[in-house]
Length: 68
Image (cartoon, rainbow, N blue to C red; front, side, top):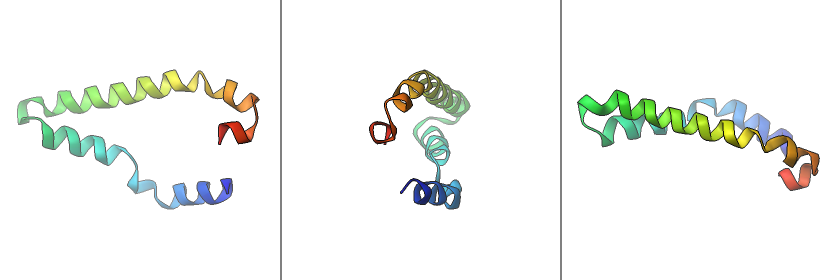
């Protein structure tokens, strides 16, 4: 199952979350605020991912089934 997941992620690289962030920031905000909105969205996502990455080693030490 893990190999299928990795293969599917490799095939669908263009369908990631980045397009959604760009779409939301460009469609939901006025022209003068679009670049700021996009920057804030990317910053929030990257900071959240960075915070989450502190807990990944703890999850992996409990075993693959817990992590999955």
